[in-house]
Amino acid sequence: MGLQLTATDGSTIAASTPAYPVRIAIVGTYELFSFKLVSERVEALIRNVDFGDIEISLLSAPGTGTIARLWAMKYQLPIKLFSSRCPDTGAICPTGMTEAMAAYATHCIAFLEDDESERVFTQMAADHELKLRVVRYDRIPGRHAKDKDH
Image 1: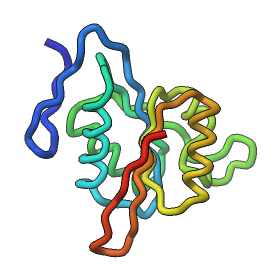
Image 2: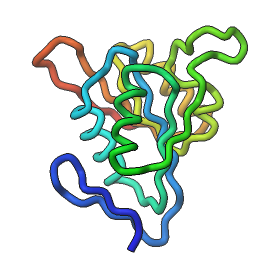
Image 3: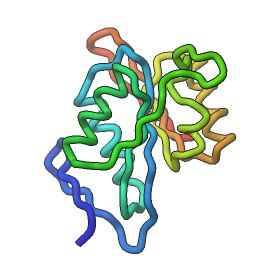
């Protein structure tokens, strides 16, 4: 039997056969620290793709990267870390995803707060033929995240 994950809600997510490896880039703001939100949205994405092996791609940065790393470690999934610095300037990557990471991934889930970030990610995903899911969330307590596939 292939890879199986027990999701946060207790259901089982099982690998399809035949399937291809899925490299999921999990990106977003440095200010997102909701393990529950990241877990639920990544598991929902995985349910909707045929996969054999899963590898999680992250930036070496706090926030979404830290939470995604904890989620991947929970399931003992391989993690590929990318530098959070832009290669040309050395500054922290403002979009949360570098070109190298976008070129490597097959899928991306982006936890974003604003329209400008969504435009940047939508274009980057199109340029690299990534399947993209954007999770829009609000840091104000009580507001709910909204998902949009591109």
